Every structure is written in structure tokens, then in C-alpha cells.
Length: 285
Image (tube, rainbow, N blue to C red; front, side, top):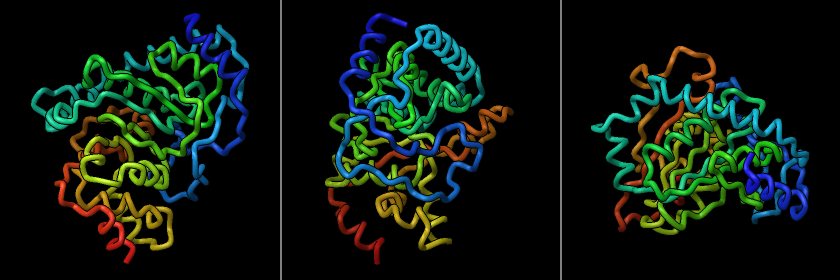
């Protein structure tokens, strides 16, 4: 672990207020990614956050960084990742047009305890390295992170914020939000924070659960979690969605399936004359 990473976590442990919160749906959960679940209560405004486990063991950090690098190598060699690198793919073209200046990995869960979460972290690291501009920055957050995981994240080039914003994060620059297997309420919070204008929403790209799948769930269960995510349902009508794994590019591995099943890219290529407030009102009627 670098001295800077250790110092950052030591400062966090001394300055932040411990906030005990229920963890989000973790990337290692073997259930189908979009299975209905009770929404986790989200903070209305950002609240101070610090790791639930503030103990910092340098040996554990070193082991976790090594395991993360092994996961990066594994994902880099996979069929899944090779398909993302195809120069002629529509994904490459859309990412090139967006030119994300930041990658935010939200809701990844405990990547020390979950092999699937480490694969998701590995994919985020590779996307930043290979598909984003060289100067792009990266951060990650989940309220279940430990101090060891925060230090490992810093060693891997990811900053960890000191506030839990409940995914109500406004994109101040073009941003790729990788939100693996999060609850519908978290995607909805992110979209709501960027819903004031088409130009603002165009700054956002979401890699996460399929919005189309959420729309189907809302039709099937009008009182379920998906039906309570109006921004997700409205965005599904104009989002460009491209699903991972549709062409057999998921590797034959259980952890790959748990990490990346039902995962889609969402780009918001809407015109300036779209009345976003009206799309929410129509959906609620």
C-alpha cells in the first residue's frame, strides 16, 4: 500500500463520523440482477460517511490489491472484454462522442469478500484504462466499504468520497456511472439529479441493470420497486441501451455470470427540445 493511500484512510478514520447504514445490493449477490427487492432508504441530502470497519491492516491491503490485479488480468483476457474493445463497435463510437472525463463506480459492495465485486472493480479499472480519455479520473463508493477496501481502492487509482449522497450525484462533466446490480431507487436518484435539462442528461452514461427490464417489471407489478422509479421508466423511452452478453460474450464462469448478467449500457441521446418534466408527468399518469 502506498503511503498516500494509508494517509488518506488514516485521515478519514479520524475525521469522519461513523454512520451505520444498511448496505446496498452487492455485486456478488447470486440473485438475478433485476429481481425486485425492497428499496434501501436513501439520504435526502449527503451525509458524512466513514468505513464501517476502520481497522487498517497493511498486509490485508496488499493482499487485496494483489487479488484485484489478478481479477483485472482475468477480465482483460475474457471474451467479454475483448468484445468491448472492438474498434468498429457502436459502444466505442458512443463513448468517443461522450468522452467521459470521470468514471464513478457506485454500489460495488465489498470487493474484499465478493469475487463478483472484484470482477466488477476490475472491469471499471479496465474501462478507465482502455476506453476513457487518458486524463479521466475515477472514484468508487459503497456504504459497506471497509478501511482496507478504501486503501486498496486508492492504490488502484480510485478516490473514495467522504459523503454518502445516495447516488444523487450531478455530473459536472461527462461521466460514466458504473452501477453493478444496484436497486432501481439508486438509478432513479442518479437520473433525478441530472434531469433538469437534456444537455445535462447527455453528460451521463449508465452501465448497470437494464432499464428495459425495469420497465417490464413495472408493467407486471405496479406497486413494486421498479414502478417507484419514475425517472428510470421515463429514461427507458429514449435511452440507447446496449446489453452485455447478448451475443454469447459472457465467459462460461459462474462468477462472471453473477458479476455481469443483465448488464446494459445506457446513453441518453435526446434533443434539446425534449421536456423532461413532462415525461415524468406522463409516466405517473
